[in-house]
Image 1 (cartoon, rainbow, N blue to C red):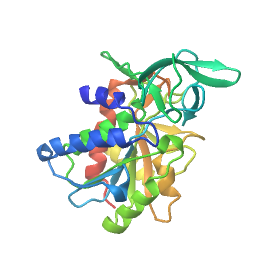
Image 2 (image 1 turned 45 degrees about the vertical axis):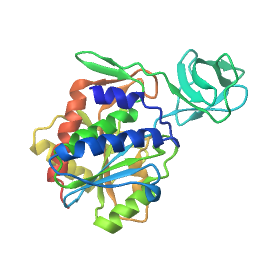
Image 3 (image 1 turned 180 degrees about the vertical axis):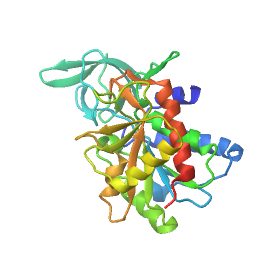
Image 4 (image 1 turned 120 degrees about the vertical axis):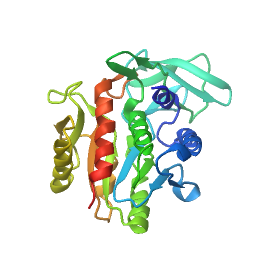
Length: 304
């Protein structure tokens, strides 16, 4: 879990994915020769901060967004949210501007939110939750398990992946923006048109801790049911523990694929968490293992 702890600590809110992107490139370059199949890496100016790994003869792509929620400093230390960040008083925030390190607490004042800090912070500075990674026998608790756990899962799958594509994308927490052109590149170059969305979902009245990874039938977006059924059948035939989810809200990189002009099939598959978008997101360790197991099986067996 040391890799997951490190990923959760990297300051990379939406729009500032460059920090985690650099870390991932270094990690991939260092480790890819020890993986079962060495991938070709696509990154650089034509991909902005995004990364695409191509293994063997791919038929399916995994999408995992790198960015997190956070805040942007406005004027006089007022802050505005990046994505669905919390506005609860007392949350510890960290960042860095031209004058040095920043650590303060969130305060509500007259229907606006501020960071309580001893000096004015440079306008445009981004802030994120202060990392506090906790691990026991049952749970991982940390900020930014959404979606650093999805990134970690993709890296675990990469170790044994023979054929497939892994995409590390941007901006998901603030409306998206990268998956359209990444999906276009993948579809046109490799004729890959089915995707698994490696992301984190919610504990609800129908989704519980310790009951397995979640296969989402729908959220705000509705994937093609025949594709979702194919995934469910593979999970059942391989005796993999999973839960089904139906929601009316929420979204992911899958929505961008569905709204693209290309015939992508997709399905959101991820571990469920409590305390969503807070400094204390909580995931059951068994569900993390379930998530990795189901992705490995699907990438091996999910052929068009």
